[in-house]
Image 1 (tube, rainbow over the protein chains, first blue to last red):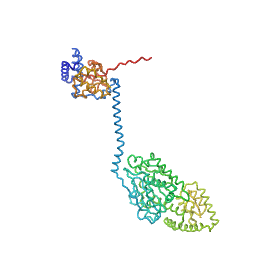
Image 2: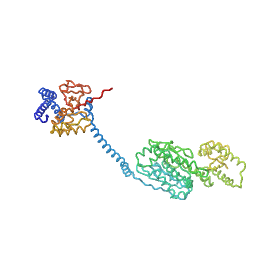
Image 3: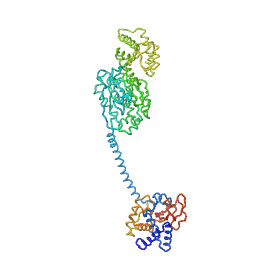
Image 4: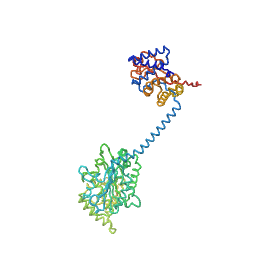
Length: 497
Length: 126
C-alpha cells in the first residue's frame, strides 16, 4: 500500500506543493503533474495526488459545495442498501419515535396543568356573595336577577353611562313596589377555572331552598341574562317533578334576555382560550346534547302547564346589535318558547341589560311583563280590587280602574250561586266562548290586545276575566269586539262576566 | 447507503485501521449519501491526516468496493453533471446545470468515489 511508502508520500507532497505554488494555474499544473506521473508509471501516486489535493484544498478553507448539491446530481447512482443498515435505521427511528411520543404525551399531560396554574394565578376566581338589593322582607313577591357568563351580580346590570343599576331601579319604582329584589351571583372568570353550568344550577337551587324563598314568598320571578337563563332553566327543570311541583308554581314568570338557548358561536372560540367550563357548556357543537336536554325539559314543562297550574310564564328578548364585530346571541340562537312573541331590542349583548333609566325600552318591556303576569296571577285566584286598581293607576287609566272595580263587584256577586245570570249575560258568555273557539289556532299576543283595547270606546268597557288561565284582561263588552280581538291574536280563553 | 465492508482493507493495512474506522462511522452516519466526496470528508474529518484519508479512498478503489470518477467543480462551487474516468479527458469547455459554459482550468477537477454497482443477473422473461 502506498501509505507505507515514504517515497510515494514524498512524491505526492512535493507535487502538491508545486500545485499550491502555481496560484491561478493550479488546476493546469495539477493536470500536468498528473500526466507526468502517469507517463512515468506512477499511476497510484497520480490518483493519490488528485484526491490528496482535493482534501488539502478543502482543509485550507477552500469553499466546498453544499451536500445537497452533490445529492442533486442526476448522475449519482444510488447503491443497494444492506439489510443490516435498514434494520439499524429502523431501530433508531423506533427509538426516536418512542422518545418523541413520550415527550408529546408528557406535554399533553402537563400543558393543561401548567396552563391552569398560570391562568388561575393571573385570573383569580372571585367568589361572589348573592344579596338582596336594599330593603326586603315586606313584600311577598321576589324578583331574582341572574347574570351571564363573565358577568357578576352587580356590574352586569349597571349602565356605564348613567351608573343606573337595574335592580335598584326596580326597587325604587313605585309601580313595582310589591317586589323585593335579589341578585344572584356566581364566579365566572374570563380565563380561570370555575364551576360548570350544571354545578351552578344545583348550587343555585339549593340556595333558593335554604334561604327560604319558596316559603317566604308567594311569587318568585326571574330576570335572566345570557347564560343566567340557561342556569335558571336548569334550576326550574330540576324542580319539575311531582314532589316539588308546588315549588315550581311559585315561579310565576321568567324573563330571558339574550339567552343562548341553542348555544353561542362565540363560546366556541372562548372555550379554546379559557379554562372556564361554562363556555364549553354553551358550545353549540359540543354541548348540543346538554342544551337540547335543558331546552327539551323546559318545553315539556311549559307544555304541561294547566289552568290550575299555569306557571311559570316565560318571555324572551334578544339583541339585534353586534357586540364589537360579533353577534353573540342572534335571534337564531334564542329560544322560541315564549308566552309572547320573542322581542328584539336594538342593543348589543352587554348593553341590553343595562337600561339607562326607567324609560329605557327594555326596562319598560320587562316591567310590563312583570305587571301583566302579576295581573294574571292575581286575577285567576282571588280578584283583588285594590291591587288591580293600584296597577292600573300606574298605567294612568283611571277610567279603566273605575270600570274594573265596578265589574269586579259584579263578578263577585255573580260568582255567588244564589244569583243567577240574566239572559243578556248568558248570551255574551256564549259569544265569548265562540270567539275563544275561533281563536284557538291563533298566536297569543296579549300586548296587541291591550293596544287594541285602548282604541275601543271606553264607555262600553267591561272587564273580561279568563277563568281558565286566570288572566284578567280588559276588553270590550260588545260581542262583536270579541271576534275582533280574537282575530287579532289571542289564544287565551276570553270569558266575559 | 454506501457500502461499509471495509474489513478487507483494514486487515491488510493495520496502520490505516483508525482512519478506516472513522470513514466507516462517517458512512454509517450519512446513510442518505450515495458518493464519497473527498472535499466533504476533509471538512467532516478534519483531525484525520489528509494523506492517510486520501490513501484509504484510493484503497477502496483498489479492493473493488468503489470506483473513482472525476467531476468538474463549477464557478459556483457545485459539481457539474458530467463525469470522467480520467482527468485528462475533461474538455476545454464544460457546461453547468444552467448550460453556462466555463473553463475547467479556472476552477478545479475533483475525484469522487462512487460504489461499484453489483451486477445482479435477472432471469430472462419467458
